[in-house]
Length: 116
Figure 1: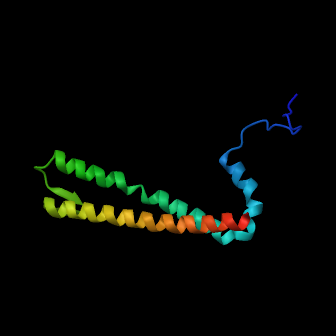
Figure 2 (figure 1 turned 120 degrees about the vertical axis):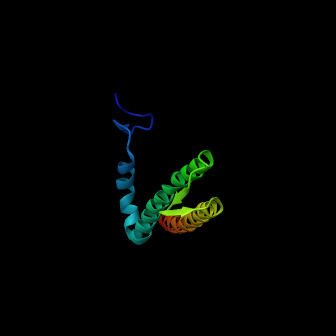
Figure 3 (figure 1 turned 135 degrees about the vertical axis):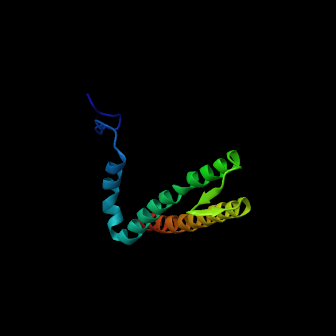
């Protein structure tokens, strides 16, 4: 017998993420613009995290091979300029991530409040 205590049928298998999204779509339809904006900002946030290991690899390689020339973005730089470029790039990525997080959370929270 496949019933729970409340008399409802228990699901035969667990729901995946896509099943949850499909279940929420009827509620999100009136808020399509906010829903799409939230998804786009979420993807952009994921993309922002991609270059971080690249920059950290460059710094670690520069420290381990301090006698070699330092290359980044096709430029051959002295050590202090190299570190400045890395530092500036990391600050830029952090600022972009903060801005994208704000713009991702704002429509998401608006949509959630409107749906309730």
